[in-house]
Image (cartoon, rainbow, N blue to C red; front, side):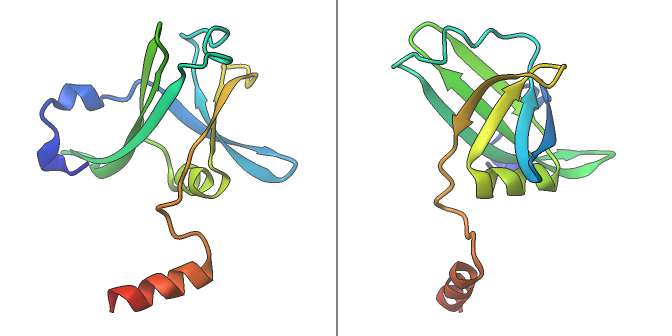
Length: 133
């Protein structure tokens, strides 16, 4: 989402922190959440989630990349605003998962994220480069 499309900058204040954990040598993208209970969400057939990336400009920090993750069921709505590091972004693109964990690093819930719109291999990158020239 471009900066000029942000109608209310208060909506983009960070609410959660992200972290990369390594399980068996493989990076895993995690959001630390201490506020929500995922027991009712896990097997809910009405579960819908969306991930929207954006750029935000801070006077002191400059341009920052972030995202909003929205998880919705018929009964609940959860929204997370996160400013992750580059490793987190790359891990989500390649692993296509985000895990919700607590402060003790216990898994609470995870989502499969479809990242088909991203270039993931060198052959895809080369094909993309030819298309834009």
